[in-house]
Length: 208
Image 1: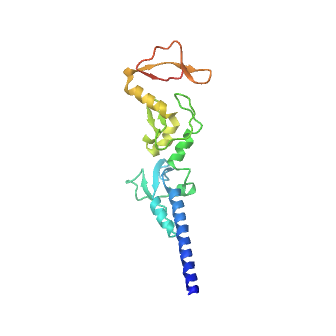
Image 2 (image 1 turned 90 degrees about the vertical axis):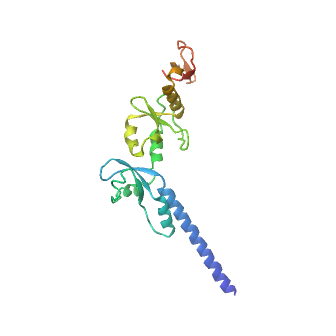
Image 3 (image 1 turned 135 degrees about the horizontal axis):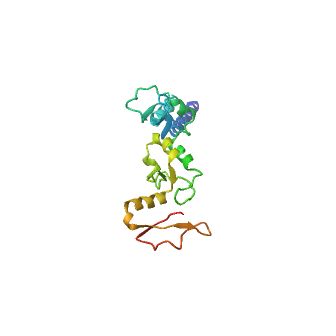
């Protein structure tokens, strides 16, 4: 009886260990492949946005199987039956082609085009930083199609969330805004020049 209980306990421990190991592998697989990515399409040699079926990849990994396939692509449905050769780029460096990593790297080391404040950590769920087009119109980065981001980054300037909100208000309420000229104070802060007009209903900061 004791021997039987020992065997049963061993089986239970091994089974539990296998479940835990499989779950860890599945979780790592899911975290590795989740999220939208930007790759270079092998057919067009242009940027395309793709999404790996991370849920199915994780389920297959749970049983020791490898499954890495796309479930979304910006070139679908027209090219939905392609060979998905772009997955070689995803597998080579899954983190490098993640949209949020690409965006984070682009903003890193830059300063807002308006207030000149350096960018720190990017807020992913709110207060998204923005981009200023050559015509000075602003748009938040997450409003740009991911496959367009590499092209946009070449000609747009970074704008912080606060300045984006101010510029959006300014554009929509031009009659309530007074543009003032600002300059750097002794401590590096922005202060209005003495010859600036008196403030109106809304004051938008402008660096000189």
